[in-house]
Length: 172
Image 1: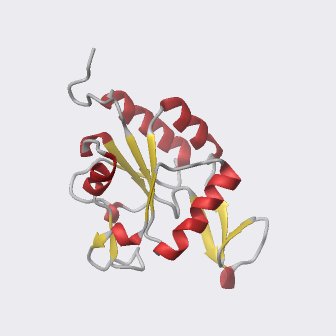
Image 2: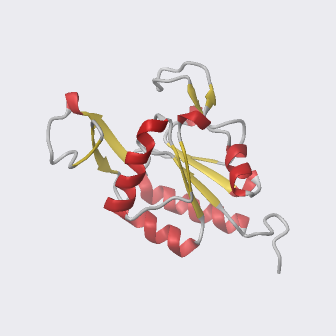
Image 3: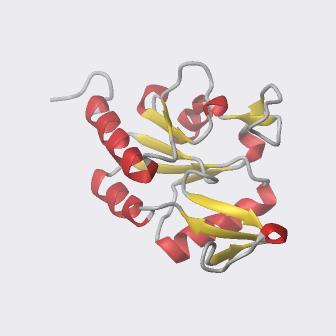
């Protein structure tokens, strides 16, 4: 039976990068290789706990994974390569700060171009915006009442997987 809310059955999960999939620290603040074992550009990085479960989950659920970060366009490729080669995670669409829109200056963000309008993703992939979920650690990046899951430290990526599962179940 066809789902009238989502006839294609496609769900898109848009992942933020920093403090959602990975943590990073600038090399000038770097202290221990045990804390941040990997390096991307001039940052030492470590995967968020349970990042290894994301690839299996995405493959099993057949969702369209998107990476959307506020990092500069010249840097996004290095992070995409890191996630693919080190963790086996690939994205169908990658978006950087050029796709973000302006927001008010807030204390928790270093930039003013950080708003992530999921309508841009919908246009790029040919899906309904209601079938897209933004997974981000910062509520300020959400536009209006678009689908959003706030990543918190206490739940980490295990909590994210549960919420994605619930989102998919509602959309299919």
